Length: 122
View 1: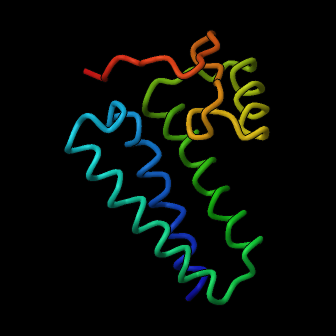
View 2: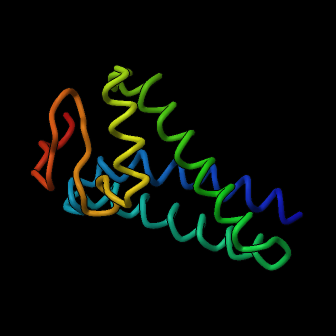
């Protein structure tokens, strides 16, 4: 059952990660509430899975499902570029704890972005 909880937690992580940009810095109520609900549910399921699984295994799998799933959603459905440069820099940036979630920069659409405002999606 722990593995089922972990897989569901990872899938919910994909959901909140994809929705996070739609919150526009948590200024849009609908996407903001949905993001927070998915985040809390994901963490709760992860905590249930960690009752039986080692923390290192559970967390690594959860992050892996979320990272790979979010990247695939972005590439396949959100029109994000799949250039070699972006993939290399994005991976390197995340390994240092950077990227939007970590407060650092991320190479996106051919430019380096340091906590710059991004227009709300239309």
